[in-house]
Amino acid sequence: MAVSVSANQVLNGGVWNLPWLVGAIVLAIFAEALSMWLEVGSRTDSCEAAARPMLLPGLLAQDGMPLLLANVSLDDLGVHPSRFSTEGHSPYIRREADALLAAALTGDEKRLVIVEGPRLAGATRTLAAAAQAYLPEYLVAGFLDDPRVLLADMVSRAAQWVSSVEEAAGAVVWLDGLSPDRFTELARFSLDDLPSGVLLLATFDSGEREGLRMSASM
Figure 1: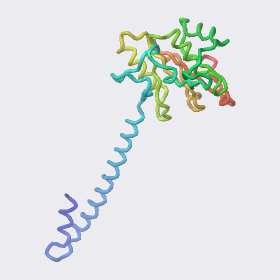
Figure 2: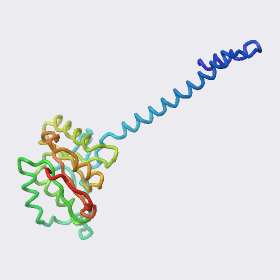
Figure 3: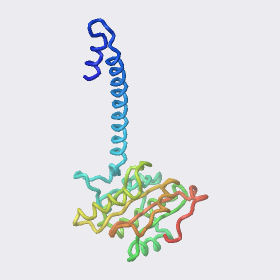
């Protein structure tokens, strides 16, 4: 509105009014700059809102909370259907890693467990079977893989759910199929900052491992 009033005064009485002309130009520039600033701010706010941890649809209860591990299917956890079974998934075949997983998931020091193997070799199925066997009362916080969302934010969100769901024994941050970037982020994450009751369970394609190293403290 200020720009319009100033423009009307530029030719007041048919005579050019230089101060009003300069003022109109300055106000027009200011208005355009303000508009651009507000637009950038709006886009930034939208990006920040979209970068919040979002649960995978199959792991989301009707009340918006994550489900317990006992109440989710293998499909929801990312297990690929078996081509050898008409029912989708064939009976689980025990593996050498099962004893190690049992010890890791039932021990007092359990914090981070990574199952690594070649693609489609059964890493997700192996970890899912162990998690459902030993941690059925844990919430499973599996998030959409948005590179803008930090692992620390996922952990923080899972910790909030643990404190708000009385029947939950804890929460598992489910990281199926770690990308190299997420693997590197996990390697840099300090397990000392992991809240009580929150575990990190992950699978990783060994074909992606070349050149990557995990911290010895893990």
